[in-house]
View (cartoon, rainbow, N blue to C red):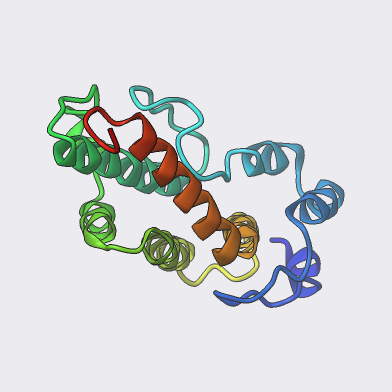
Length: 186
């Protein structure tokens, strides 16, 4: 149990600014976690660092559950986006034992949204809820540390969103596509 570490952490809530950075949190964890638990903390990330086709179980049921969900979300988004483009991606098949229906449903809803920022925020809120579900009632165990790391990374990600910069980037990208599209503007 990690009472001392967890008791000194600032409370996190979805949508707030990060009270500490993830790098500061990792330094703090380095002082309190066992070597094994600290090594597993490195696996608390978004996306699929091991690749789409691979799923190597860790020594943590919490991290395995998280990675299963992230893998399902990533694959569902890839499949839905490929279907939208009417192309066959390399993500057409996946091992059923690593599939999360809730993540698939969230991906479907996000892909149907017109505003990309709203879609990302929707996905992140789903991630937040999934972290809380995985953590369950473990308040001072290592799963609470892993959940804190993931939540901290999530609010850092959200804080990095800048609507004005994103819209300017979108307009520039759209203009570039339109200039290079055959039969457009000629």
